[in-house]
Length: 139
Image (tube, rainbow, N blue to C red):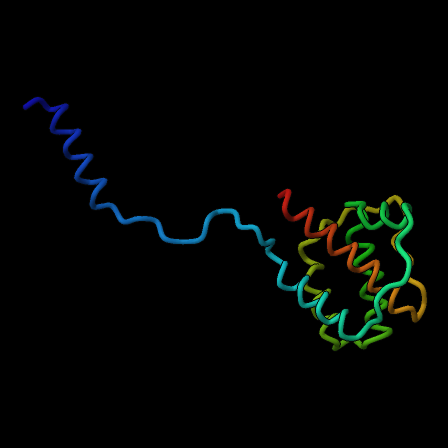
């Protein structure tokens, strides 16, 4: 028997005895923070009215602008603190995004949320979370 034949046989035996990988696929359909996003959305639906109207194109562009992710988060956190308090579940979940979002220097103003308008807050935060989800899926 040639050494090449023995080598093939040895490799075949090793392959049969090698443990099979058991784990999650490298890429899943869920983003790392999707459960936080879902919690925020569930809380919003419980404590805020359904939004009336829709976002204009400028607001959509501001919320989709990757260089404004931190600045927009700060605007949402300010509104959440003023409205629900610093210890609210929404506020705690929003804080979780701070260390993972890019800290680019914004060249434009962040999103403006109408004072005491929970519907406006909800509508804009839903769009913002969709932007974060889309950005996370492209990484």
